[in-house]
Length: 187
Length: 170
Image (tube, rainbow over all chains, first blue to last red; front, side, top):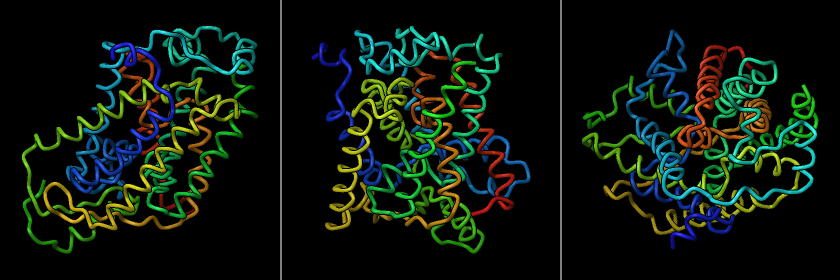
């Protein structure tokens, strides 16, 4: 059992479990699965300014903040008790491409050569971490949801707008990863 | 939680405000103690553990996905949607209620151009940071402290969107 817990989980285990979050949240309290709204609730609760978009009773959505805090705790627990022992297995082509940008450290699930406090103050670091984060927050709210709210919850509920959003996410990702990111990584 | 058993006009307007973004608009008539929220914390923990164990939180996995170099992420999102779809179908078909006996309602999403413009922008951010919002919180929990900056930027991005909202094409 512990051995299974220590290995990375295959998609056919993880995917259905993630899918189960949808009915669990609905049955526990009529909550629609969505994560990016938490950023909005943080704005509404901490610094609403004079922005109408943040003037609502965020306390009614506080479940969402408990939920994301749980995700944070889940990260802590996984690392503490059943971290993947083997290094991540990736496509050879990707490993070769990344090596070309000097990325060779696979000790973490993210390239720590790119994401650390020292690179944060370089052009590359600002583009990847600060601008990237900004695009995630701005884009998800503009689109009205993220991978969870649109791609999983919205598609599960057969919503055409969510399909349009999901296609846009993927298109944006393809363009960035293949055309623009190589340039950023070579900075 | 409010204790109001009716929906006054202001609350109705507020309901519109909160639903504009298709965020959950559960108007529960019940009031609960704060600790009832802990069940959402537990589901978050469950979700966090799965996403770390399945490497969904990995920047590398996201790069593979956008280069069509691996089936992993497509398998996860695809099977999650399948399970979600069947679950919602069952909930609607059998009219399943919440554990408090309240009806389950899911607000439909309305199309606006933001789903395209915002979707593309989020796609850019997703490929760059290698994380959507959920994984960002999990990564921070994993001890990757610098991700806090990405999360703060995302909160700031959300704020700027809220500030410019009226001026942006929708």
